Length: 163
Image: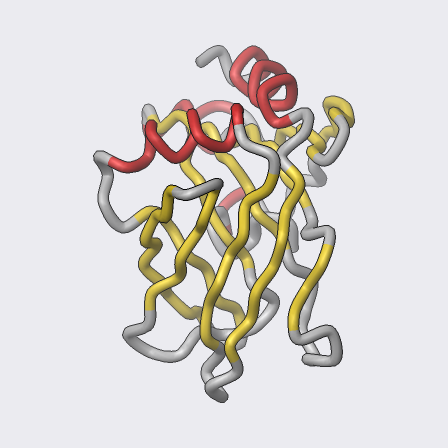
């Protein structure tokens, strides 16, 4: 379920591992217009620690068929509260993400397209990303991701997808 929410058409293809770069790993899945390359990380810490959740990830996706490079996505391991937003904080900068649920899975993406490039730059030079969201049940979660190795993982992802 690494990116099944974002890419149901390529979910049947197993991902090809491209390498690990400190806190981040790089993968490629699919081919042709359905190909996606992505950097993926799991949080160093999840709060509340006892909350029952599916796997939790942050991804940066390249979709050559969509001409989309560096699309940030949060997979929280639960469905979000309807109409809620997610905040990703890197240093003093905060970025708003919109949420969408599909069944029991939630996902979040950058709300303002103009923030996408700023977010990636902050992530490549930052130390941690703090992701805050609210579950359908009203639980406030806070996940902390390490950003070491993201720039190298993204270089590998961009190379694999020719972007």
